[in-house]
Length: 275
Image 1 (tube, one colour):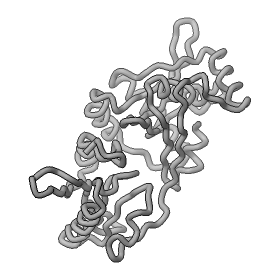
Image 2 (cartoon, rainbow, N blue to C red):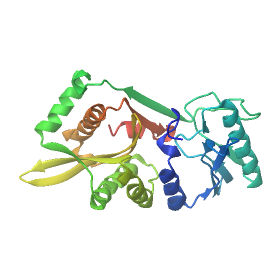
Image 3 (tube, rainbow, N blue to C red):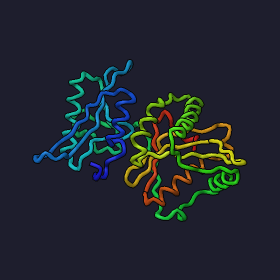
Image 4 (tube, helix red, strand yellow):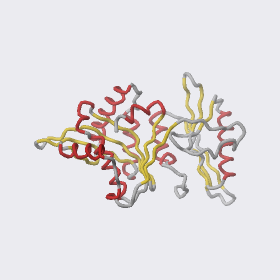
């Protein structure tokens, strides 16, 4: 189904496997076949139990709406998901989408604002990118201070980044994701080149000190910010600005056309401050 324009990394079987194993979600994924037996639509679906919510049936976050190139198939998938949720005795069924096209497609299904998405459409040439003077000064300061960017390549790199991620979530009073999520993502997505870890390090006298790092997901023409971690006492060196600049440049050079920053409303203020 990757050929469909609305497909996202969150429909990817490897990502679904990460969520199932890391969180113990019960998979209830739905598919639709045409008269020849060919797959013509899918809807990722999980079930979990929450103390406050009871049984919940949901598609993956932040975006995994019914995937099909036919409106009727999309409607059938939503209806089937509702029926499956009722069979599971779920109190709620929900899926997330960037579009409002699904409103009232099925009786009782309406959209409500949940997340904000910021998307930067990129130029074909990195030298055509323009940022304000404040950002340019920050990038120059990071470079003059010996900050260098490299790709994380090992589990050791991932563990070092996770320590910074824990510091960040603690500082912002946000519940951190368990390390197992990132470990499984690295094992299953990084070999397929759809997961990338960028690290910012200060190099002094041959010593490399980790300052910050970003995790990105890549799918087709878009690279998507996933999580960030940083050393708070070293932010005057502006490693996050250099990380963003480097990521945007790499995205252009690879021929990708957009980069997105997706986050929940709870994390809006805190995560933006890590940039």
